Length: 94
Image (cartoon, rainbow, N blue to C red):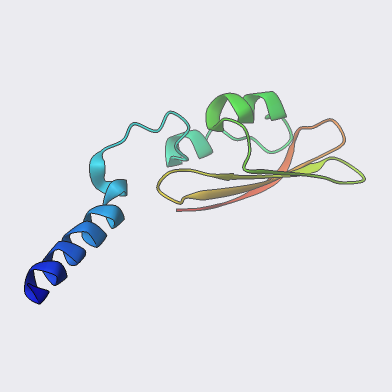
């Protein structure tokens, strides 16, 4: 009985950790193709939201804002926006 409970526990824990590999279609995935379209000085906040959805975090600043995006695969993107809400710089990790 103890072996059965242990096997079931391992099975359920393993299944819970494997959701990323189920091939879920993430419309707002942070991909190298999308990130390559970010142009510092011209990409706008609206364009970012079209590509990546609403940011996970939006931190207003005295001049502009900081945006943080994260997708289902835990890729992340930090974006610094200027006064005109245009990309000033960004950092991407995959």
